[in-house]
Image (cartoon, rainbow, N blue to C red):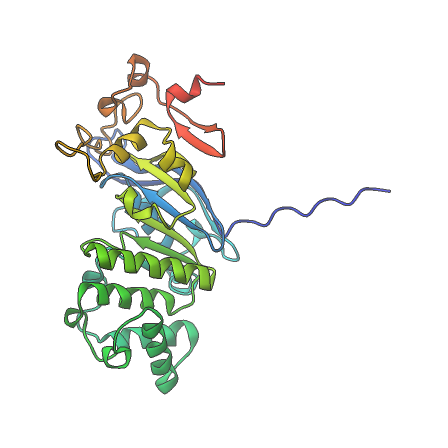
Length: 335
C-alpha cells in the first residue's frame, strides 16, 4: 500500500524569478542596459518585506514592473512575475493589467501630490475606484469612501471627500493615497517611499498605519525605502539592492544585528547615531550608471573590503546560515 504523500507547501502570494528591466542606453552594446538584473523574491500573504538601497539602485522600477506601470521605453527584458490566482503577469496586455491593478495589486506612490489628480476631489477619486473594482455607486460608494478615510485616520473624513489634493497637508495626502490604494481590496500593496518629505512624527504614524492595516487585512506589503532606519521596526525580512541586484537578504533582526554584505554595513554605518561625534559617515563614490558597470563586483570600486579578485569576478548570491543570502566573493569562500 503506497504511503500518502505530504501536501505540497502553498505557493507564495507573489513569486518573482530572475526579473530583468532594461532601458535604452548608448553605453550598452545592444542599445539597452539592465537597471534591474535577475531580481528574485517571494512574498507571503500578511508579510511585510523591505526593499532598501540608495537612490538609483532600481527599487522603484522593480515596483513599477510588479504593477505594470513602467515608463515608456523601459521594459521587462526577462524573468517571471507570478501572482497567486492571476498566473504569469509578464504575459498580460494592458487590458489585463487594468483589471488587475487596484483590485489585486495596489501602490502607494512616493509623492501623493503628483499621484493624486489635482483636478478631482479626493471623494471623486475614491468613488471612481470603488465603482470600477467593487461596483459601488451613489450613496453606497460615498459611505464606503468615508469609511476608508476614517480607517486611515483622516480627520473630518466626511468633509475631506470634497477636498482637492492641494488643500490637504502632506500627512493627509498620504492618508488619502493609502485609502485610495485600499479601495479595491488588494492582496498586494507596494509602498514606494511612503514617508518621503514627511516629518519624523508623521513618518512614524504612516508606517504604523500601514503595519496595522497589513495585520488587520492580511495584506502582503513590499516597502521600498532608501533608509534602513525607516524599516527597522515593521518588516520581517529585508532585501538590500545595489546596482539593480539583490546583494543581501535576511530576517530584519539578523540584518540589523549582524549585516553580512559590505554594502549593508556601509548603509548602516551611514545612519546618524545619537552620541556619535564627528562628521556623518558616508559611502564614497556613487552607484554605477546602467551600461557602465565594472567588470567584477558592482560595489567593488566603493568597498573598503574589496580585493583584486572582486574587481575581476562577479559574485554569486550564495546562501548563508539562518536563511540569509549574500552576493559577495568573501562569502563564496566560506564553507
